[in-house]
Image (tube, rainbow, N blue to C red; front, side, top):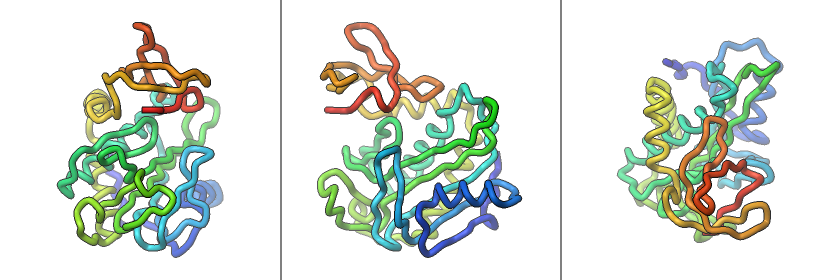
Length: 243
């Protein structure tokens, strides 16, 4: 799929959140999708509920892409896979290594968060009307007071300042490239980067601490964990990483 996004970018100084802005814009205007929304600052940046995304003004890439989705509802996690891999591809262009994807929505460098993803879908009668790909990528921010040892940025990894506009353009190209791939190829690449895959790890599952092994992710986005030689599926509210 060729998105051709160069002339479909709407820029803001401040918004509540780019995902919310994108959703309202698409619902209230007759617009040809896809459209990109980006901002210097979010007053209420969001991750997967109840998480928020905190970012210094003008230091990071805050972006949402509204697009018509041809993905079936049964394969709804494919957009998450495509977005995650596009960010991995982008970071590899900066010669950054030790990258992994922490299910369902974080990109890590050496176990430190560099990016959060939020995919939202407008669904009507079992069909996806449109999708919004949201991402917050730490680019030039140096300090993370609330997440001192849990977050990093491209600058912290490379000691180089990058123009946010240039990073955005690269990200959009990576999205286009990943959309060209087969879902099988993308799934294989995703699993190769999946954090803690095939390693004995500790989880809090339904408020019980258990050892398990991450094996895969199903088409609906549930995490598949092997517990006592039986593979079980879990959604975000049912499992917490303790490792």
